[in-house]
Amino acid sequence: MSANHSNHVVFFDTTLRDGEQSPGCSMTTQEKLTMAHALEDLGVDIIEAGFAMASEGDFAAIATITQAIRKPRIASLARAKTEDIEMAARSLQFADRARIHVFLASSDLHLEYKLKISRAQALDLCGESVRLARSLCDDVEFSPEDATRSERDYLVEMVRIAVEAGATTINMPDTVGYTTPEEYGQMFREVRERIPAIGEKGVVLSSHCHDDLGLAVANSLAAIQAGARQVECTVNGIGERAGNAAMEEIAAALYVRGDRYGVSTSIRLNQIYPASQVLGQLITFRPSPNKAVVGANAFAHESGIHQHGMLANPLCYEIMTPQLVGVDKTHLVLGKHSGRAALRHRLEQLGFTVGRDELQHVYYRFVALADRKKNIYDQDLIGLLPDAIRERRREPVAELD
Ligand code: KIV
Ligand code: ZN
Image: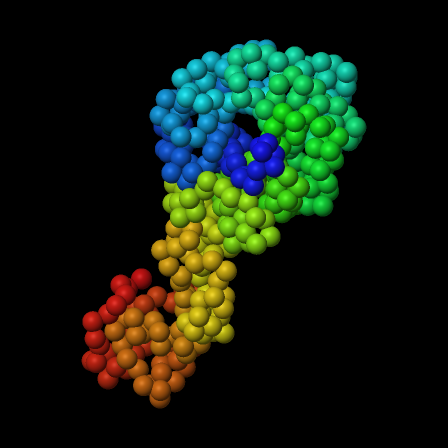
């Protein structure tokens, strides 16, 4: 069975390349190595470790990672230029399993204004650079940059040439986050149908999405449904401008909605949150609290109706357990929207048993306090309790927050 028709989706992590090249995210070689270990633990198949030609630091980081990381394949990015490709190959010389990733724009906008070359020149460059890369490495990925804004016949022509020149993976990037799920999926179907060699040679099609319209993950999933068997993404969705497709969201969606996608991955889901935490410590910002899967509020519930439902059966308001992705537990946050059930539950955990009338009394005081204060801590709660309740305190089952 060719790679394209297998149901295994390869995770190509570009946190250390596309992610790292965004504001506030640059990392030293040592920091990149720390993150590479977290990515290895996470089970990603390929780590894009950097852009060797970009700086000595990037070259050093790629070379260092190839010597320390053994399980994932290591990729090094190169423009369609001889010196870039040779530099990428040198940066990978110690890798057990290496990939050279060559990219070249395919949209008229990029060819005319950025590269100032004709379509015909770009096709020549594509063939020559993929052939050169293949002479240096048996695993070569080619990306027609700005694929989603490229004229379709021309894109197909460039991909055909890259496949004939020996590319083993064709990645079609939505470089500026412009496409929609239907359109992106359709592009994958069309390219595969129009280039039979993709299926015949077992060339893997890959998605690479940016989040300018907030559609990066939806677009990546649409590509998978259309036959892409590699997905490019970053931890916490870091990356140029609004970021890249978030690795944790794609992995969680493929698992939780396995009924829709029916694909397997090598991702160790319970390493998702640890990897997110490692990255947060290495760069200048953490995911926003409401970020799916890894945000501080992703498994927190404040409203009374939700807390009541959660206490009755967590499935009422959680589609996955926090433990699935490596978060220790659900947080029932006490605030002005909370109800008596959650208040009683927390007091019980802190060792205070309250009767019905007592609860009513404490609840009124709690709501009055919550109206004035954004965060209610355990000490605040204890401060609301009448002496009679405090004196009956048992051994708590939870630590104070
Ligand atoms: O977004 C993009 O087009 C890229 C390529 C280099 C793959 O990051
Ligand atoms: Zn990108």
